[in-house]
Image (cartoon, rainbow, N blue to C red; front, side):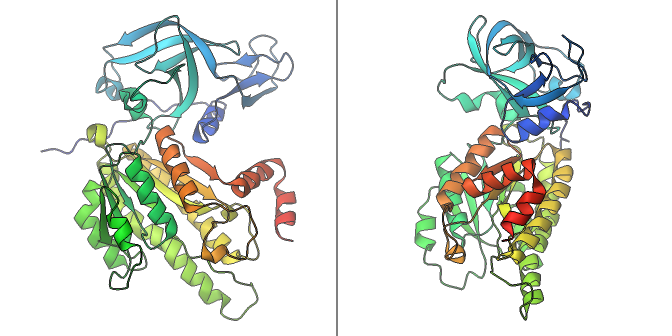
Length: 399
């Protein structure tokens, strides 16, 4: 049988409209607001429709509104939507002013209140989505919403490092989220693993041999289960405190890059093509790739300089990988996290992030279809300070 190719929704967007994409990637509902007359504008434009000012900026906006009319589209000439008919759309009068054409959740009814979100479609662009104002059973099973997210429910996932506390917490969170099968990679399975019984007791977990430092191990696992993986969560890490001028520092940097950057590259070579090819496998198609990255990839922490450098390179690689995965409609999410409450950050003062907290944040990000999440106070603070004054952050974090 012929393998179906993934079709993508129309992707033409203006540079101005990418402001919506930026907000959607982080799970925010943001619209343009005029700095002169203070009115919100939609769709994105270069001048204010009321006062013709060119000073428009994207800010978080009230997300409520009233669905004034709805329609069900049953025929279209667009190849992507033709395979997904019927499709509901409607006009929402938003609380902040503009009337917005939105994709509708099946629970939205004419004349009732709705809440608006910005979702990333399979082309990686923002689309407005309207939810019922009140939650209802099985909200996440809406077909249109599932197209724009990577909910683990009913999907099969691979977690790359089961020896890592983060990988173990991730397996538990995925099971609670309804994943049907969870492959957990174990490097050097001949070594004792104290948590093995606890992992095997998790519903749906299957331990598999996976060593990201060994290309043969990655290729062999991809040949075995590659066509079964809908969500891949890369928890690979190699955290070591290193001083730049200490003897052997270059060797430690090489070890970190081999475990993270090159390990991710091996994963991409082995699992990426088959995930792209499975982008059209229906409701249980390949959906998402997740990279767990240190927030210090965004700003170097001298005490953990090796971690910062290797994860900064991993971040660049993830941007490259995202552009390749998009051809199959597969999302890539970067989860930036501050110091973890693990042994390698023992001497770092609080606040720290528990592995279970990180795992739940990743699952929530998949449910919402996000591209970037920031987990913990440190990661969120770095994100905010980087946007405000990157040079000040560089000086302050290096003290």
